[in-house]
Image 1 (cartoon, rainbow, N blue to C red):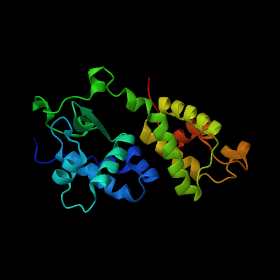
Image 2 (cartoon, one colour; image 1 turned 90 degrees about the horizontal axis):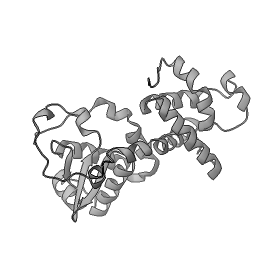
Image 3 (cartoon, one colour; image 1 turned 30 degrees about the vertical axis):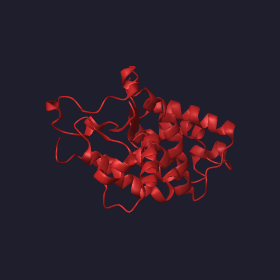
Image 4 (cartoon, helix red, strand yellow; image 1 turned 45 degrees about the vertical axis):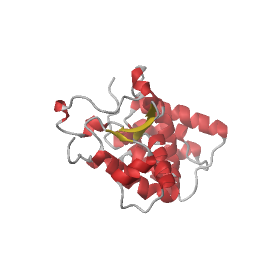
Length: 227
């Protein structure tokens, strides 16, 4: 196993990394630091022992956080698509998502001592992550809405269902990092902007964003997904 790992410079603008601020609370900074240390300690397949106590002792021994806080942080990292945290034959294992995409020299790797996630054995690699993209976009939108508009994003259950449907369409048209840029530009538009005239006086929603996303993307020189 390598003595160190590459940390991509895109991590700081990752939607998953950003969305931790939505529900990690006081553990947000700790969770982000822990993720970087997990990457540094992973084997050539991005895997390592995953029970909270072992992670504390091997990965971050100088931390004053409790085992329960390590466990909560790992759960947050999994729910935001940064790690797979799974159990095989009573053994808890962590796998860094998209690990190979950001590492060099992995062509010489042979086999991991940690078993694959069961989902991969069933041939479902990556399917849950792809299915969760609209949810991550909805979470990101709420986070950015509060940061930019200085007020919480309030929506009924029906509105949230429409938001998720619109988010799914955005995911089909643009990469996640591009959607983040489009959302920021959309939420920064003044209320009297010509693009928003038809919704004057209404709170900005994701379906509204979808209607104007193409023109915003063009202004930002975003090409979108090419089929």
